[in-house]
Image 1 (spheres, rainbow, N blue to C red):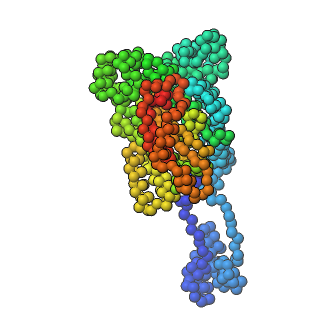
Image 2 (image 1 turned 45 degrees about the vertical axis):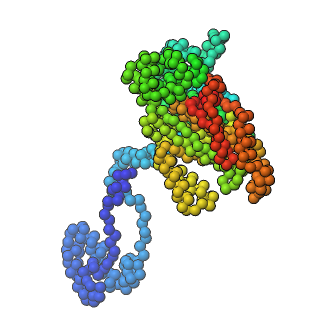
Length: 602
């Protein structure tokens, strides 16, 4: 088709207009005698009796004779003047502009060429379109099977424990398509013995549990074992065939975990909220999967409330090394990070037995780990206080800092062989009721997109409040500077619930690092709905001064509240920080917690 288009485009074909005077070599106002003289002269030159050349004969009949007839015959002259030709009105011929070499081919070669053109230009695009449409109908925009999404939605439950999240994760249709080979039986049996302690089998009935495990669908059994091979760093013992399946499991995992997270925080029609507990479990699984750390490492052990998991993502670390560190009363990963460079080097070289090069490797990874801070507030724009049914706007600035000064970076994940970006999930949730009020994925990779989004959000917000152009420009300039310094603006809206005081928690969860999550607690006070324009009057009528409000909030703080935590950790009352209050409108930001979402109240 491309060759035909090029050929037709470069064909030079001029449309010739019938001009009798020009054909006879005369001026337009020539007399009848001049016309006859010219005709005789050209007849001597082109008449068939005088010139045997066939082209001369055609020229004489088609042009010279008709030109003479158009100028001398009354009927022909009238046709020429009306229609531009002595023969009268000419019909218009419509035809396909094909090259002559296609029309001059005879026999079988012509049929083969025609079939080739039809196949390449018609059948091939049609087949490709059918294949594309059939494949696209099976996948979502994130290249995840619709069947997988249905399974995730069905198996997702509000009380789903973090250890049970993996059972839902492995039901993906992408994993069910993994081939099952008889040659894999023996390597899978050896792998099962290596990771058996991580499969949550009942040790009291271990034989029955093992038999029940192997009776599952063969593709599901293989997927579970390959996932455990990643978590326990057992991939080196896999056979070449299993290693190909293992890489396939790893390659699909980021997309599947992202969609599983969306299923956890998807607002259910009856409740209007997503679920916090399974959402934390999905992020924890993603962290462990990326860093190749077993889920059991999150259990409280060795004096560590958060387990060994954060340490195992550092190079050269093992459980034995972590136990040596506990002798120096380093009880958390945060305490280990807070040590000075010299103190940490002495601890690693003298206690853990690391070389200077090994210690430097640890420092390099620590400098890559992100540190997150959250500045969040909730308010009803243009109104004082929050009333039932109001549309509440959440403004959150999430700031990322690293020891090496970078903002956008790929995580240190030597056991994950594919491209993996850091993603953060901001959740505004009520940990007591397990409800996620707002959720949004945050990325620090694209600074330009973040500047555009923050600028647009600030402009819309300020214009809605009736701010002047100068104020809008100043706010936009400040927002752009924040983004360039490593902050991201997250805005969302939700409808205020019934009247009452709500203890909310904002979670910023990283899907790539263990121990880098951040929590911030805040209180939202929802007032009883009143008539429009009477908010200030209602507040004044209650007789609450600024001091009274602060006292009420202090009383509410003493009541305390419970958080959903990872099942692998326990609350550590001794490590709780001191609460500090900052009142923003009717929302009080109480404290910021560092560490994993499984840190308890730290």
